[in-house]
Image (cartoon, rainbow, N blue to C red; front, side, top):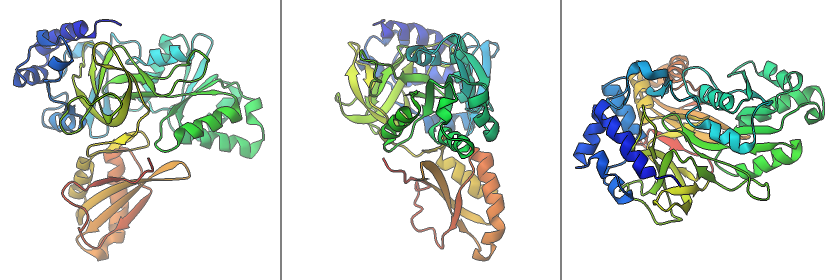
Length: 408
């Protein structure tokens, strides 16, 4: 194992000289980057929650004083719903570490990958693209939309790799099978890198693998952190459970309230420290919940479980976070809308978003529906599946703007 604390000291000594907000975090904790010699020193820094980073960026856009390099050193600035800004240094040609996942799965030169993740503003499409190119694969930048064409490309272009959500993959298969049976005999797919789902996702993946004779893969990463964990085959060639940790990340499983590391095997919030220059995140609270399956000698997790849920105020739908601030903005933008709440459920394997709304005047509910749906889509880039009007604010609560009703 590399000495991650030596790397941490080097990265953050440089970072605090460029990033005043990061320097302030160290100063408030009474720390200097040179003090980062072990986990106990690191844990003197309070966890920075993703919601807090969003709040800080809204007050001091675009980067809230956390950018640790010159603007000229960036290749991309991604804009995720919030909005939250995520810079990518030009020196990073790996897709923020995504190449590790592809190399581990055996993807490389000669593979053709149909990448159906979005290339528009959000980082998923481009980061996967860069990771694939870094291992020598050829990429078809499909992005979102053009569903019928994407289905045809699985047969006509015969890619060996598919990237997209599990629901989208199932939709493409359904389109093909409506035209002709036994599509798997006509395509050339060997790997499917699929977006994760709560619930019995492992069984769904096993069913896909058995039916289509392909390998399915997943990873754990975020727009702010890049690749955190990835899957790889074990000694028997079977997929290992959970995620191995990218050695450019230091991962702790922490109490979501105190921010302190939990005993080995306990479920808690995934807290990540990155070890790369430009956009270093130290003790960043992801809001995702997992368990450490294996710890390294430096105290950081080397292997974590699959995700078990979320903590914090945000909920996730179709790989995009919805924050309370989105619902607050929605209510303030629409004249006649007093309050809004979002709940996320699942129907036939697809996540569905319901907006629960309170109008100033119940007689105007019908007039408000179209502008509400449009404004929500602008704020989050997600289309609501249903609108439900409520008669009173009872149940909304001070922080009750979001609810995750997915099975877990």
